[in-house]
Image 1 (tube, helix red, strand yellow):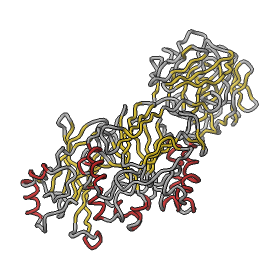
Image 2 (cartoon, one colour; image 1 turned 90 degrees about the horizontal axis):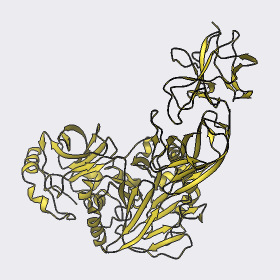
Image 3 (cartoon, one colour; image 1 turned 60 degrees about the vertical axis):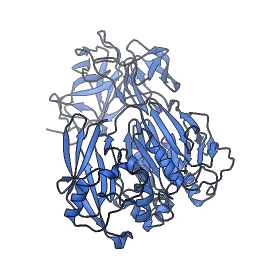
Length: 635
């Protein structure tokens, strides 16, 4: 444990900390000798693309701040809040003071070098490497996973030294990080002190294991952590959370009390999890929590394993989680790809469960199991390298020359349902119509097309129609929008091609298939606006005889030549037989033209009938569109 050297006045401490700590920088990484100055050296936490947190402790109170400087020499100063931890509560020999500085306004993918100030004086830095971190950004990255580490033995120390040499962006620390009881003392000695060199450069995102809960339901462990808060109830802060890094969405869960409460209907974690996974658009969905559902060994028949299989696994599979990390079993185990508790073909849309509980504590036995692809009762950690649509995992132990296991995840694309018109979400497609393809693992990143240049490739992904590449309007994990070429009609096959494989779906393209857009703010209302650009809705309804514009798709081929996949340079008129039905009354539009605001969109200018009408639809060449309600009022 990093301890203070006796009681000091604030003045004595600051003078000693700023002038007398240079010799401490020569201490070995894993040493627990007293370091003048910091009680606990700063650790980087909760790093995002534009923010980060630094947490440290001192043996005396002070007014502290962090000066963060980027590679260009620009710096900013961030104040730190202070909390006092009394020895009577912590069980430590003396009181200490914890400081948290929240850094904001940072640049994505930038390196920041920091120094800590106390009462305006810089504190001398006692570690080998500077206090320096990189914010999250797009592109390839790597991370570590370990669990069941904190017994303070030689295996933990040796693994920590090897982990510190890995060039990674973040670390997942998956519970049981201090034994046997996760007290303030054991956490300080076996977690913060052991990994302090790496914690000063790389954020650790941690969960609670059963040993954390043995002491006041994990409160000593949570006391030093800063985690994301999005959507998490106040009483559960730090116990579960999620964050993004690159093209991955990470979810930390608590398979202890919050899972029990959620199963009983008194907690929110399962509802939060479902909403969180439903909301993400990231390609990779990576979940980590302590208790495994599919690991053999000492705990394989425990109640916790059954709860995971019965309550967590269905949600994870529903939302396409590809990779789950667990601990608890002091072994390394990797399942085959699983779906509904059975082995699925490789990269076919199932989930791989990795139990990585060999972070330093004595290891357990493993037993053969038809669901397990590889297992070993060894101390280890996992290095995962994320590069677009693939993750390569390397499992490393105490032998620096041999990897215990290697595996590559490269999930193939899947299409769910038919391609649909992006306005009506019905499989009614026409020449020139923007169409949506839904599924999983479709594109490694979110990419939107420029309205001025056709996009035929997005992060290695393409779509063909009967073998010919067609324009992409948007591409992401679960959805790709394309434009059916104006020159195509009849039967066809849409094929999505990705770095991991291809998948296809048949389509029938008509000459006309009209569809009105719903109002995005009120889907029951037709998407209509006035000449000044203001939307028509229930708060601002259309007036009788008012001239309005309706947005529609699938009205046919315009009168002039129009390139696919981009906006026309001018409004291109359409002279097909187009009418608008306001209830039972038929009105012929004043003008119909291809829009200059969205690819494949038509604008229909028409006057509202004198008596007004609620239900509206467009008819093109005797083919009616979907029916929507138009908000109308009386002068």
